[in-house]
Length: 200
Image (tube, rainbow, N blue to C red; front, side, top):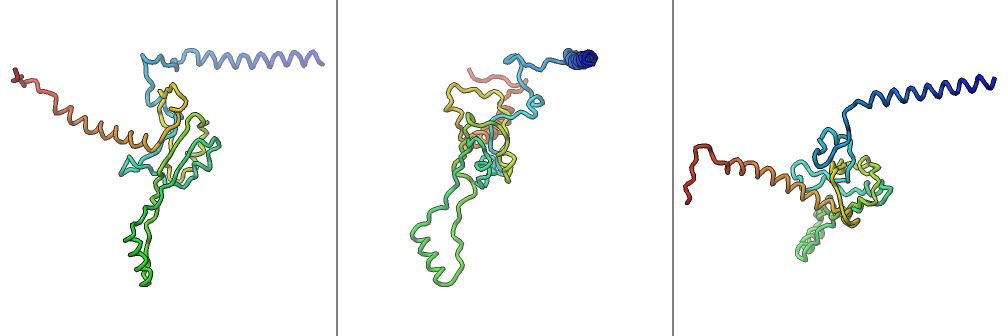
């Protein structure tokens, strides 16, 4: 009985080998996935599903300001403790404003004191600690966090992986605004075929 069992184990092992070789043979002739950088660059289609370092999502009307409401859900959800959010403080009132509020309260009026803006004062991210688990992105109620598609990020010092995401968002919004303004300027500068040079 043990001889038959041994033969059956050998047959099933051989069958699993054949199945594995079939998959290998099918994928062997597929197009190569590896890119030979810098001769080739990664396309947007190839970056689908890529998880790069985190970045903030800007507001639709003002892309330089984040959608973040400083709820601290990302900080709470992060197992690596790589996110630091500092809430904005309420603006300080001058002596005259405080006196006016006090007088209005004495008259029995309801006074609405200025509250702190919901935008964060600081949003720091340490990519050297991040495990890209996605807990922060999934738990953000404002959908203000996403993965970047920065596949070419390289640094020479670990300190460079500590990022200020507010400054990065402002830089991205500025770069996009410059691209929009440069396109019409370049179109105006191009000389026509019939134009002649007059300077000597």
